[in-house]
Amino acid sequence: MSSVGSDNFPLIVRQLGVQDYSPVYQAMRNSIDQRDNSSPDEIWLVQHNSVFTQGQAGKAEHIFTPGSIPIVQSDRGGQVTYHGPGQITAYLLIDLKRRKIGVRDLVSLIEQAVVCTLNHWGVKANPRRDAPGVYVESGKKIASLGLRIRKGYSYHGLNLNVDMDMSPWQHINPCGLGIDMTQLADLVNPTPGIQQVSDKLLEYLSRELGHEDYQVRTDQTFTESTYRSL
Image (cartoon, rainbow, N blue to C red; front, top):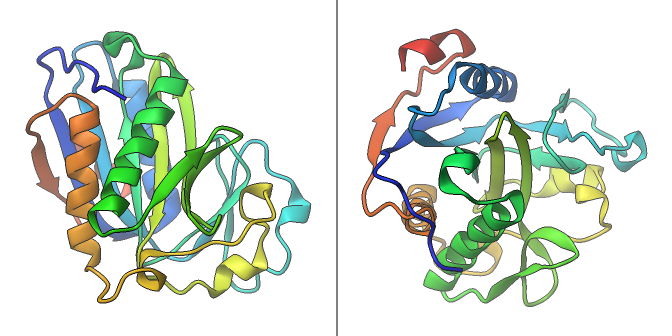
């Protein structure tokens, strides 16, 4: 897919480190309430502490035995997924009206960026027309997508499994699809560091969004209440 125009608006990238899910989720919602047509597009890069999140279409029966891992209800699309350290979560806060693109276009460019990132390390992967996300040649899923559109702005985004504890996936039916999950560490030796993968993913995401460069801001003490000062 060709990249979409940036219309001379900057792209802000926020490096948030490792964070609990709920404060970042609420901050995304706050940011949508604050946005107007002069607001820059943003990508938030974060690793979450262990949590299961249930999307709007989520069904309780897809969570088998959560144990001590918390379950958080989310307003993103899709069903249940897992977040944990060693997984890159990229949230895309994009003005779709300004870019003149639809949700399907955004999904496609996210998937293409993930495919290019994996190809960089020699991993062949593709999206599936019937189920958003990215899948390796074995059919296992390595990246999940879930978006929400409000007032013409997107939020939520993608999860890319890099080098994480995979055992929690056994406690759910990922995305309600009855599929196996995998990660880059199971496919590439030596495994690249998560910062390397994050940087490469950001390179391809920004390219797909039509930005040759972007502004990176780091805030690893991020909380829900600090969003307005970022």
